[in-house]
Image (cartoon, rainbow over all chains, first blue to last red; front, side):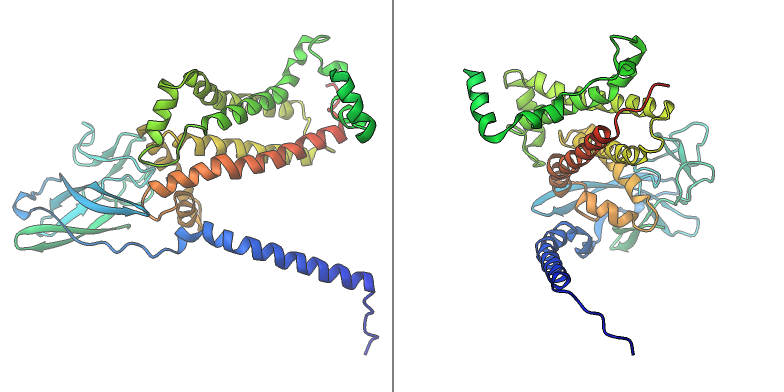
Length: 165
Length: 224
């Protein structure tokens, strides 16, 4: 056993005062930091399904459909417009793609570029996606377009949450 | 009268050495454009500071009319520019100054880089300078949103997507900046306002202080 280290009076005071100062600083900062980072811990808003269109309107060719959603932005409530590219696959399954480019968030259009008539095209940086929303390799987007949850009820198409792929 | 006032204060507080230490020092010949015109490249740092002071002053006055609220932000900017006397000038100073400060800062960085003025013993000051560059870019990014017009909104949309592309913490970073996990809205504007007007300027002042103390202690680098 070695001799226990002696703590001098000066060291003791230094440690305790530094510790006390540290606690006081932490006590001040903790509520402020938690206050600032609160958005990260807020539960994600559960998405409801919204009636978008009559299923008969959905064809094999992607079409733009728009619908309105009540959005609660903290203390501000508003009605916002949502958009999806909707079409029917060969096996009759309905696909609804988000029009937001996964590169930097511009809006993609179906067949808007004459050189690529069978693809989604983003005018900002020339990003392209195939009909099923998968990004074309060699173009800026790094992920496929998100798909909306779909539901058909009483002949109406309902769209829910966006799911990133 | 003024001299008397100065003497009265100086007699008690001894202010002479304070301002002499700040302002009374020789400018070496090789950085004085009066001797060698090419020495104007040494002006960019000072010009950056000068325009920064303009930004701080014009920004202070803009907040007399501006409100960081999504219902009123655009209207308050429109009002202060169109209805308030000299509003166009004050907002114009802040608007154009933001670009000028970035350009001057870039030229200052180029001068320091190509003259090798960042080398030992001035590495620390280079680091402080790079941090200042980031702070200025951050001020430009957050200030761009405040008028809350379409250009501002979609530029921020894109900027947030860039932040979200950060590995691992990207989504969290985006949420922290935007104030909401999916919406760019009311909380984004208040956050950007707080960051633009309080947080980044506080960091800016600290870093500027360090930048100037370091240049004073180490002196300007010698001639090429």
